[in-house]
Length: 356
Image (tube, rainbow, N blue to C red):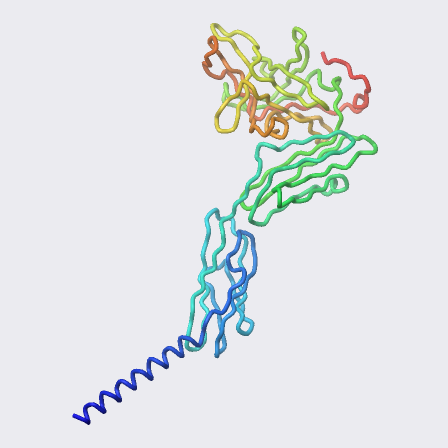
């Protein structure tokens, strides 16, 4: 009996020693600290510090996450993510006898920008244009080299704004630039111009282009801006309708909404404005800001939310009404744009004439 008890005691001691050895092996590799391994969508680097009694190696299971080892510190690097959802990599840290998995998380790319605020213009005294922009990933703002001397920008991360500064023009020569802003999978082009437009530059024939909702095709030709019954109007390239026009400071044009423009059978036709999301408005105008490009004065109607109190305007419309009830649209002027060569001899007229 005593012999049996001794054998049992010996077995228990052996088990205890084995368990103690396993615990020692397990505890020989421990993660002591992590720093910066919860990444934003932008590329970046972080570290994982371990306690180990043996040489350490590290390996990631994802190509976008790479590792390198310096002593007991594992350096982790991630590339920029263009995915909209978060992604996870497992970094396996090993010694000769132990290993541990450490998750590395990278947030999805989030970029918020105002896609309905693409045009800005100021006079020769210069000005400032604020563009709403927020991102958690890398971004680029490409100002053309030829505009770098008069157009600069800063990124105000506290207010989520790209702030463009237009310098004063000593020689008062019209100039413009197209600036490409990109971040993640999003990219757009901003048009920033400097010119002082006189009324005498507005009237007459214009090259006109737009997508006709009524005909379902691109339309290009000659449009006209002039007076009709003492009202300034713009006649489309097909001669089908005219749109009312108003002129604001520095030649900013707008198509006011809810203006009666004619009769079609039993319908009363009025100007209207298409808004983002498939809505229309009878109170918000469709604005066009002067643009200078390739020696031309250009107006693109819509996408000027800085001039419409932040309302996302897309294009002008002709809407049919029976009494006060809307019957439906008759024409949609999608991407309506007019242009003409700049007549430099008219730019500095101090007393502009009324267009006809």
